[in-house]
Image (tube, helix red, strand yellow):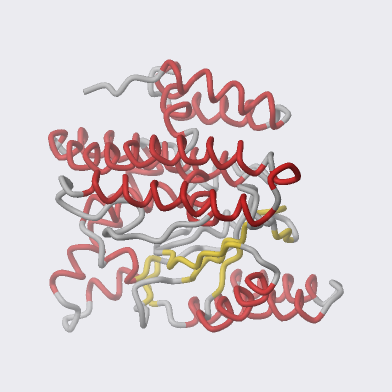
Length: 356
């Protein structure tokens, strides 16, 4: 009943918004989440069902253990999340659209009631996302659509477990649960980079703490290997985006056609460098298997999830890995003006060293 009453409240809210496109978007979002919830079954019942595959049963039992750990050891506000299970028809639960002007690295923002503005828009229907993508492409924007394994409703709803989680290997499933629960702790309106970097930091440090608790600390090396691939890619992206920023600032001087040609050269060199780097990797990197095609939207999305992760991890270290104290510090930081909190996170990032 709690889920239904919240959905009806949101439906009443969106009817007061103007514009058919806005109403259409919120309707699909709410109906998509409602459809997800109506298909949910209590995790305990799925575990107890004799017809449940042993692999799924073990994953769900592990998820319940990780859920308890998240609340007790990581001080994450678990609430009633992850007590129900949904079998999805595809590996993603939603797809996100990112749209960035041709000569900019600042993503288009969509603003929503209660959660503020975000640099992406989520769809339960791939066709709906592609229709909006086409509109941005007609305006000359760079765009990217990516499947999302999980999302957080920030505590407004009791988010379920689903097959997007359970199809992952154990450590990635647990880490993803920690990531999504972290969004319930701190959420800064209009700062996707802050929110996602914070959640990724909790994901990593939560996984480290979880593995140590289970006597499997050596398995964190796998997560560190993925992190190293991410950081190597981030170094390439930072160099390329620095060049692109300088180029876009010369738009009036050089003219659109020259900037367009030079932009493609920078992106091509980045794709080539990524391909060379990934040859030694045992699994695909953040942009997937090479060769890759990159644009402003790919780069903007990647930076949002990774830019300040070292800074948040250093802030946790500064608080002796006391998660409640860390969360209070993050909340205080989030109350600062954007420029001030970015500067603070940049300084923290410079101090961070991986503790091996």
